[in-house]
Image 1 (cartoon, rainbow, N blue to C red):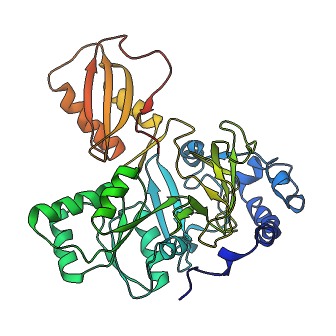
Image 2: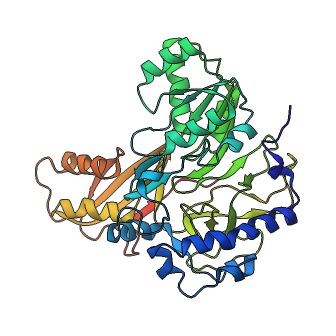
Image 3: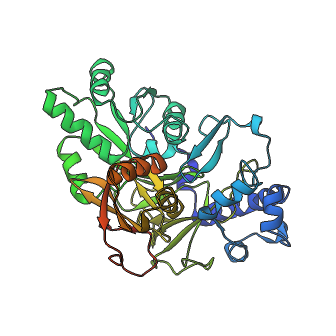
Length: 410
């Protein structure tokens, strides 16, 4: 049985690079047919963009700017070439950011990430990513079915029902956040439910520190990390070599100096910028806001594409909490809804291997029920629960920080 999903994974780096950049000019031509890219890429010659040096001269499109761009030209900011009805599904993610899904069997290119984790045709996959409006559930669902697996569309939460389903269907693999995997295991322990049928896991959307990796491994589950976004799908994936994350062979990935579009030297930490080759939904130098660094050499798994260290923090103040992006604009919206608030800072932390949020609020006055009201607004705006801490005026640092991600890296 092959250890690789397709021949792209073992293609020589030079041949892969040549194939990607041979396709790029046609994608740029398609992009320039859209009103958004016609402005953003004004004056470029698609035929001249045939290597990384030429690509690096194009402007970066920042994911953080997409909510405003899409609000000005709904729903996709004028950056797609196909009519809405030609897509398979239409999603929204917090921000809000609107995303379309293609009609291919694996539209997000994620099957190779599941395959690298050992998931094979005939496996039963418990998919606990959300299916409601956001694309996470479908990113994994379509990938597993492209391999030939049966999928249990469980979504997050409903722990009791999840345990019942596990008992009935005996899934061999789990896909979801590492946090929820831990919750399921602990719930099974507490209720005396056997879930030892789950042998493999593909986790994404939240930190998976070594301590939690060891804890999951001790429970007999071989877990692999996958790095994907709601707009691009699979960007990188972990292999059995456990030597970093291999970049998706169908994308052009650059690591640039944060705040610029300038590529950094190999090994230097920078922001991830991705160009896809989808003429219907082109993403040209999309800066996703995450930090990483390229590792030297090739993977011991036999895959020849470049590898990255994995997620190393955010280039901006946007934070991913329990698989959901939380943005400075959302924190501002909370303050707008409560006149008593003078200043806010959302502190993201981690306790007992689970992401936490604390909203620290400097206030002018504290009316009755203030903390409960703000807690409710926090959940409404971010779709996540958190605690609220009231502070006197002047207590927060004067450093312009709205979201402080205080989770340990690595």
